[in-house]
Length: 211
Image (cartoon, rainbow, N blue to C red):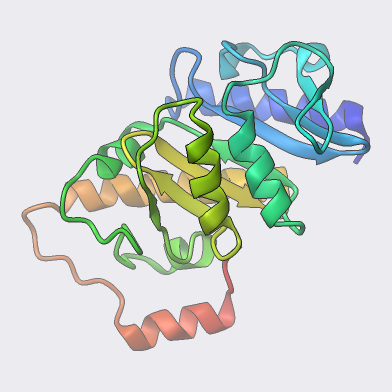
């Protein structure tokens, strides 16, 4: 895909995410690999009002090549790309239900959400909880890097999800599946859910490796 078309796709995805309430205000950021570097939504921008010509373009050292100043969370995206060469896009949101799960006590930090559906396993697999660091803190980048080699999706504590995909569409599908599962998990609090069995989990992971 040429860079012009990719810019349009990023803006179209941002608008869709914003209009469906998966992000709000100027939160969240989207990136994708392109020839000569990677594209990222600018700092302080609303995903609902992105301009293709004003997207930030960075090189593989994180230096701005063209466009507006990048999101201050650009280092999260760069860490994902550097650790996951096969992934072509990254979506980071502050989506309500995923953030709600990220602030709960007593979740399993190795795998935050239970295997409630086959589609969650297919698109996310397992979901580690990255310890809290303040936005913009480079220690957060290092923490993300420590998980990214084995996980294409992770939940930042008291912050939100970061998901990489083999395409922009794949990353978007995965982060939306995560948000839907987080919502389902919260709806089931106080109930007695019936997650997939270990045998069913193993079968899905064999058939449909995530990431």
